[in-house]
Image (cartoon, rainbow, N blue to C red; front, side, top):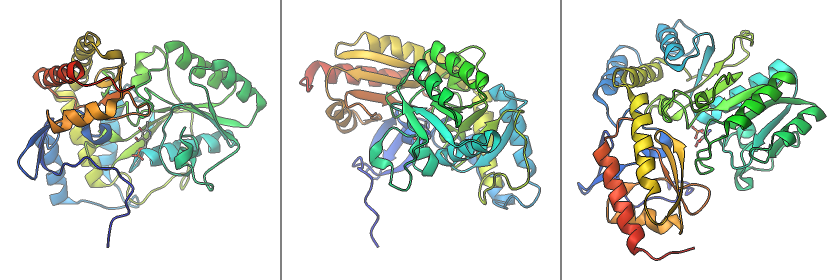
Length: 382
Ligand SMILES: Cc1ncc(COP(=O)(O)O)c(C=O)c1O
């Protein structure tokens, strides 16, 4: 059987990984500044994380949500403390799209409305409601398209208010920082304005922190860069499990739970919770949120000084770099000659950096040196 060929692949076969380093099947070392789409938060194969998962597997790996699973409760407790949302409830699932799907359903149940608003450049996943709120017509199948879902211009509060006033809006979904869209940071005025509209018109504000959460931006969640924003629902995945598939939503105390309202077979299983606990413990013990804030600010300062770079955006270790040329050939050169992985974004001149949160300065600096060299010698491809 062959694989369904949907992924353009980097011609590298990683077989081993540690921290921010990868090794391919030829023994070549690579620096990983992408973490497989922002997933590697506490570093590849972190010993504490590995032990947590191994120990759990030796005890019990899985049982469904039909029995008591105490590690779910202790995970919720720890997540509440570290995220600053101790009064919210946790529902666990397995991926970012699934987290958003549950967030959307919950907002719709609570408001008894069906319409949603999302924003240009946004990405919320590939499942039915999540993809219908994603700004990429190529991945929306005819069965996903919905007339009551609207993608409005990024930053346009007036358009949001007008649409909400038309009625039938259950929720507004926005990324803490847009990832696939090229690391676009919402202005404090935009986020605050959305929160106010949501409150005034009884619409649920969903913060999609799938990519920007878990310390990635130098705060636990990216929206915490803006004062006094309290979303109704926060969706999470990626960095949450450091590679183990786990996602979830944080739900404000205003929502009422009832048996069967949401559900999943795999979500919140023992192994997933152990992986999640391992991640939170490393983030806390190694002060990784601060490391992300400090190193991110430093690397952004350095990048801004490099000729050929026209814009640098982000917070912490979620960084978008706009070049004065096409980023594709530059990223290929980084892999081929300097053995450094970076990410792409929707616009073709953007490089996306999403390294492990425990990356070291000398590793980031080797990227700065490599990028400087490439930009000084490669032709400007507009
Ligand atoms: C902001 C955001 N939301 C949702 C998703 C979907 O997550 P998953 O691929 O785990 O379904 C992604 C994935 O890139 C994302 O970046």
